[in-house]
Image 1 (tube, rainbow, N blue to C red):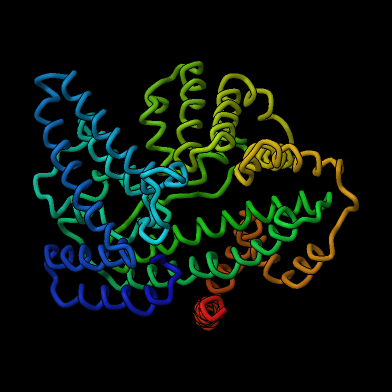
Image 2: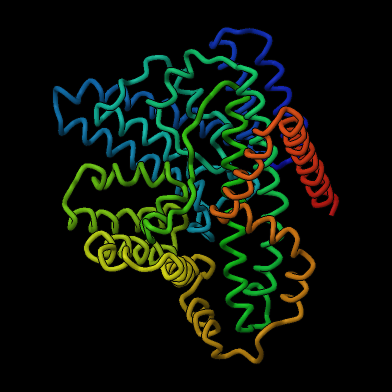
Length: 458
């Protein structure tokens, strides 16, 4: 089950929200959240419940043992933390990257593989790691830890919340009208990103790099379509996650932020899935060092870990290493050379480097990656633009313009700033802007639901 399943939107989620309002005690709310989250996590995959309880009790027991050993025997604490890392890594490989075991005794059917294993296993290890580092105390109440581990609010696409950020909210939280209003709006607009805008760029991606016709513009626009599809799907699910959390009284950290061109490629990397990157920078020691050389080396290691966490393959490992290497080079000397360039040149630099590096994620082999790179330069292509790419763009140009306004920070701030100025003039304008926003939210919800219904029927 995912956030954009109709059975979740009109079944599990409203049932969970209504039941949680029947009692104000956090223990009751946590119980409802655990039950509904277990249904969410294991929908159609009952074996996932066994996996959850097994890994949960191992994390809980090892966290308690690490806290006891941390001051008595540092070596024992390190070994216990390493054991938890090994357990979660094995769980991630077997249940999150099961394609590695095709044709072996560990091969599992997709029908029983649980969703969100990357975030689940990383969350379990981050808890034990933070106990080892002394950032938090080991949780004695296993039900509080279970609420943190299985909550569906951050199961699909993050954020990777740390237990220290959630412990107080698990034990005491309130739902206010402000949280409810903000949560519903964020959830609806996030659904619009993930359902409507992401599907538009999926068509452009398929017409460009998913087609047997290799064209020059197809290679460029197809990969840009892939990036836009990934961006709107990821940020949309993250917005839905934060919206769902607000409706339940939780306040989660932001998992992505606007790209600041002045921060160059390093800023672009940090802007996407920022909570996971923050954890890996802690793990590799980047956040605790002021040495440029150590920061550069840590960035390379962090990039490799991120690439393999995303997908265990040579291309993803190479992409992670390349991204980490470029971040490291920027920290060493490139940033000093590039920071004085005009902003337009910096944007071109970001687009080119992002295409060249992250474009490799789309290919399973270096052959396909090399063929696409040659297509960017017009080598091996018969013509410039295919009919399918032309139609994909022309039939969706309105949504493409809307997507550009959403993703382009200066344009978006210009529009929202203008709306705020109009609404601040008098009460009539304020009411008009509020009505337009409400109608827009309703329209996004209706269009998203219709799109989901059409996809389910098709």
